[in-house]
Amino acid sequence: MKNHNIQFKLNGETVSLSVQPNDVLLDVLRNRLGIKSPKVGCDRGDCGTCTVLMNGRTVRSCLALAVEADGAEVVTLEGANTTRKWTQKLQAKFHEKNAFQCGFCAPGVILSATELLEKNPKASAHDIKEAIAGNLCRCTGYEPIVEAIEETVKGK
Amino acid sequence: MPISAEFEYVKPKDMDEALHVFSLYREKARALAGGTDLLVHLKEGLAKPEVLVDLKALEDLGVFKLKGDILRLGALVTFTELIESPVVKSKFPVLWEAALTVASTGVRNRATLAGNICSAVPSADSAPALAVYEAEVLVRGLRGERRIPIENWFTGPKKTALQPDEIVAAVEIKVPAKKHGGCYMKLSRYEGEDLAQGGIAVLAFSDNTYRVAACALGPKPARCPATEAVLAGSKLGPKVLAQAKDAILTELSPISDIRSTKEYRLHMAQIMLGRALESAVARLFGKGARYGAENIC
Image 1: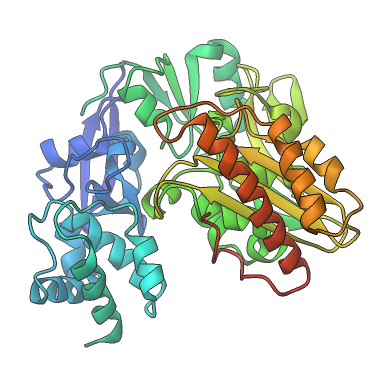
Image 2: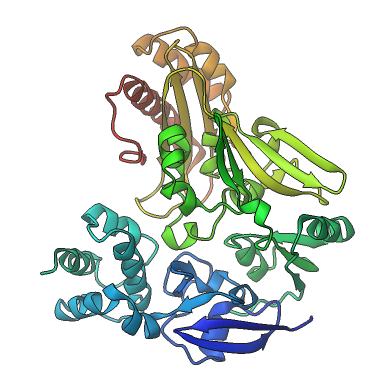
């Protein structure tokens, strides 16, 4: 296999590295770039715990090749935390409401909620449930998560 | 999990370059757009290409354009783009309604309409909507362009009319000339992301003709001509609805699998047909639920 030199923005900083065609973005983020917020869950696009923002949209980093990130802007929770308007507000509210238990799904949920509120700051409970439908949480039954996002919307 | 299969990766800058790769590698080349199916297949060893051809640098394939009453959707158009398009929502509401039921946001942001019909799984949510709008698939090869009616596109489970040296350039759909209402009704085990246990799309026209198509209720998504014939010319009422429910059983052949039994699928197909027809007719007269509100059976 022929290696590819790729360059992309990761949390605001330009990174350059050489990747193989079959390198998965999630693995490269975690194992080579030290970004640990996206998790390896189902590894087939169902659970949402590997969520990252790519060019402003949530994507499954387990279903993207690293080489596809060439030229893109990738933001993970590590970076969203300081650069996205809604992320910190959401985190504060999740924290206040103790909305997560184990936290494995948290980075994905927070990024999905960030994307939703960037698109629709007046999101309804239905919109919220739809936006996080692809983020599986095995601890909470979702109620405190949905409430935390609702309260962030209302600015409580 | 790393991908154990080994392959080369190319990202052609123009269509000719891409088509040359396909003409050279044929079955050993795979097109990469959203990758949401392909990466799963690569990880599971179901796809073993020698080369992946990333189509995302081909600007022609990003086209999203309404010209007259024909909407051209390039092969790179994602489900999120469909959902966010006022044109799709107002002129092709059944496709819009179906797009809302595909997987989840994080998948829809990358997954493409063209990819959905190229994967050609029997449960493809976009397929019944494309069938009732009588879509055409535009494919390109070195020999030129072909237009394949969606009726002839699916040839079996995960099989299409696409030749190994061709790629899908776009899908075209035409706004139906007659006044109509429509509905995509999806049956799944839970709200949120799930593959369809069954799906039925309906268009009801003001002259009492109807188009009906189904997915996950046979080896491939397909129109239901016998059901349409029974309905044609009648106002929707209990008698004709009962006849249509009998008719649809003659043209469905679902399997039993992890998501549902064959018997349950057939039973629910009749119920979904009834609800989808009632919803489509109500919408035709401006009275039904707003599109996207009640699309889960």
